[in-house]
Image 1 (tube, rainbow, N blue to C red):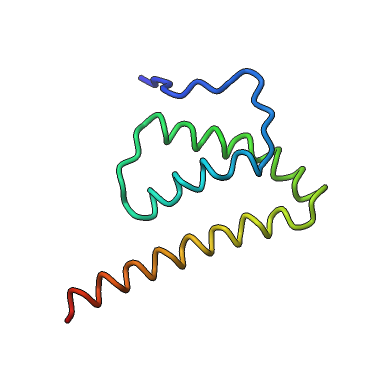
Image 2: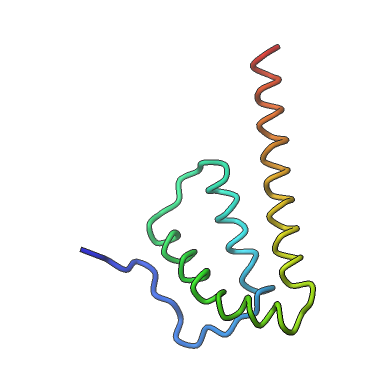
Length: 93
């Protein structure tokens, strides 16, 4: 049985710049294997679903929109790798 825990607002017309910080936080938590509630998962998938349209608009109207998302993800992953390196070095020494 599917239970929807996240109820999206009826008039959710936020831009990618307004949405990304919340999603970025969730992506970081997933990347660092922190607990993510079922409601947060649903919220993220709702964002991705809406982003299919928003992303096309960003790609069309803002030539650097996809670049901004890609760079943000690269930074998050690089930070995570650096944190893992530091933890590994501490445990090896």
